[in-house]
Length: 358
Image (cartoon, rainbow, N blue to C red; front, side, top):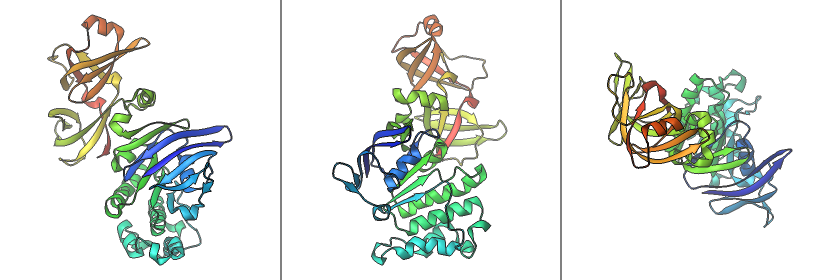
């Protein structure tokens, strides 16, 4: 478990917050410049907080009050950066073994052969970093960090410098690290798809503050996170299972809580669990089912709450899971909506978009 409560200043930037991560793998999500990388560097011992503490599995890495500040090499925390930071004059093999050789044999958790096979980099061992693709460099950097046998693996936007094709090549390797090595990981990204591909548990960060932490679908709906969620179109997030595809109509049917939704055609295999997201402004409400319409999804629900925000109303509807609909004050008045009423939520198929596979 990672438990920290710290205050840190760098120039005009201030980072302050409490974070407790009990899951074996968690994500740290937030926009660029919010302090994610700074927090990771503090955990790794590369920057020193002004106050507070950082505990890993009950052991203090830093405690200002007790005057504890372990140097990076004693923390046994591995950090993989956006830039692989490989030694350019070393071969891939020498890069991989750099930390491994410095480690006492009794502390070595993995063998080079195990990591080389896991990351499929055996054919790269005699190359220099300049002869590797971006994705290959990141796999080697990950392997070098793993062979140092860290107690915690920190991944600082490791795919940010890669194009979408390279990202899709690397993500399965990260999942293999998660599943086969069972090493505690904290994955940092401003791309929610990457985090959800690896874990549904995360903390949300903005402007140097931790806004919330826990299961993604719960955190993203908290009042103090909604502003960030709205900017990303993540007010409504559902975990669904892919049922079937119909290439003739360009439709994928998914299921959640005994309800089916029709979405744009996906390449996900039937039976796959995934996340889908929808803006609250893309949810329409009706008192009754609407016939003869192009809107493909009409799901019955019950009004849980109506909250006025400026000239809009945020309606929370229970459709098996809570859904937020952003509607006008006039619409609420015209429909005579009240808490407890039965309504139908109308979703256009293409208003939904897919997030990471669960």
